[in-house]
Length: 464
Image (cartoon, rainbow, N blue to C red; front, side, top):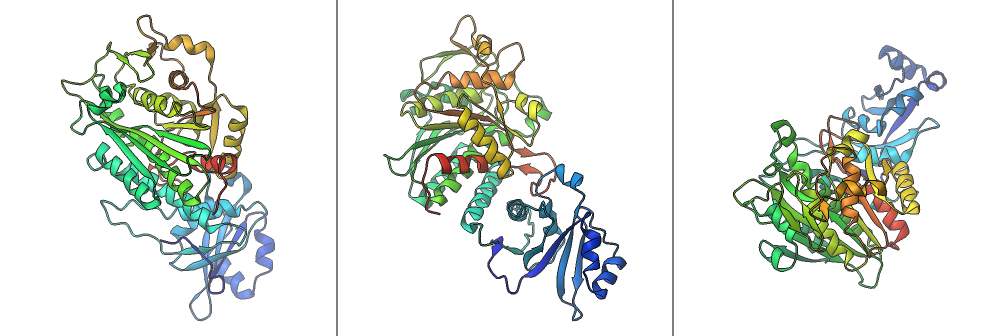
């Protein structure tokens, strides 16, 4: 489905009018339009809309309310709502307030076209929007395609998207762009020294696996994405209560996000050596499940005391990060739905991240602001290292204090990075709680647009 068009001649005009400019706009209109506006009580409140017919009964133009400035500070993608009101067709934005952001409008328009229709038929809007020449439609389409795929992967239930299916999704992406995929499965994880991935996933009917996709010139800058792929998380023997388990199909949101980001990067044909690593498991319960008080040895050689089997994500990520770190990439990014503490700290909209590099931190924040993908830097607070050091092993997977849960998880992962030039860890939520502008209830990508522009600008020359 194409969200954008170049057919400016036949496109129907959309005029966006704010409260401050409403009176002067109305004065400039014909007597016919003034009468139509007054009869329909259009006052340019936020999300007000009015279809103005021509004398022949066709749509002459659409007028959309932009409200007062205070109304527009409370969310993103306000323009996206217009797509719910207008008939199918091709449109162009012709009149806007001074603070109107066309990039936000284009992104919101396209993202609002998402429908998860795998199990229930949902009609999609067939409308398209003319994009100004200064905006790259290929890039806009890539950003939207990557986000839609991320949403789909998170929304599919674990009954249809376990470790095997996640592997196949990765293979489909690799086949499309000529990338290479290797997968280590089941007991081979032990033989090839990925003991913690195996321990977490060994109790599931579907065998645990490490998915490894590579693409690009081996001599180009190495950018490695690691995504948590817990396709369902019961909590293990420290079983979650029912309400907490209800959304655990989304515990592979890190994997879904790095795959969506990889799609964006591959479509841009950047001059990078891209690697995507996904430890894919189900944290299930059986007689072979790993237990509280077990001590696991990691690929890095560090031992980990298990104080809660529901803190499994950092275990599988540690083995995958260790492998990534062995080739010393210029940039190593980890994305995971790792802790509830991150959501409590920043809510469901803002993606918390950790890095020791001030330059990259500023870039990530700035790109997040520019591309409406908010992020916030959290501290690698070294004094808290003591909290992840138990008495009988090198590391503790779940400090008993309960304080600084997201931060201590980030410190845990950083222990497995020793040679990579830059390491960034995102502790994301990956879910929209309710219908928001361009973000319906369900899976949602976080920080992928910010990271796309970071990688595009800092590491890879682009051809699109």
